[in-house]
Length: 133
Image 1 (cartoon, helix red, strand yellow):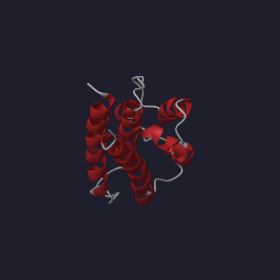
Image 2: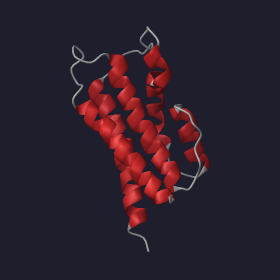
Image 3: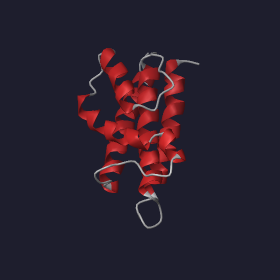
Image 4: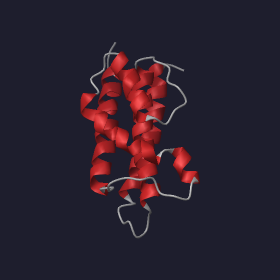
């Protein structure tokens, strides 16, 4: 599968997580752990799409910091996205533990904006790569 095609598929999955976030704004209905998981997943999938677009293999990791570091090594400007590493605490392994990950506070609107910013940035890159000859 081409890097461009894989990137498109990863972005489709990231968009599904973003859509879920939009319906999970009420903390009385969805715990922070569940909401945070979908925010982390949307960002993770978008970062993996970005790596795929660069034809860079990515490890089986949920660490947003590790993915951002790989992109940085590729010369990608990821500085403005470094704050998203805070969502790594909501990765898959925490879904199977009783305790909710320790976080200062989970501002759902900020989380949605953060995830959307990463996804939309990568969508622009994928779109630009698709329009190149």
